[in-house]
Image (cartoon, rainbow, N blue to C red; front, side):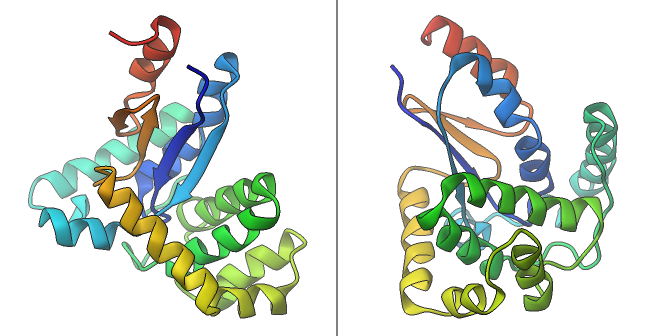
Length: 200
């Protein structure tokens, strides 16, 4: 099969950030398209009854340790941002607005937003920060700000989130490869094996 790989993530997900830094290199040998799909985990948590990993006793402390270790292993910039976690509605809406015009530019925007938050500690829940990232990448700042407040883009994100839950997406990162779901930034080894073998 040669279908695109769906890559679901929340801009407030640190494991999503680490996956975003690797996914293209992992998938490149298989010449598969990657569809980047930002979502809002808050909606999924309402369905699952879950809460952010860092807010869970014991698991939260381990998660912060693991993230620091994994970022060092991947050799990517890493800070624990403050505040964390945050709402990332504006960034997700902005992604889809750019994606409708230029999917490659939307991926560049997604990486820049992630790096701003988890690499530099900038608060991407603030409109000026997100709009500034878009502007720095050459997008018209006023057009971007207007788009993320438009009914069309609001509906687009809402539909994407609802569709992700219908597909079983409950966390970030969450990849769907030829109909097979993989959750977590530590599942790339399995995805590679799956793509090589055609599944098992």
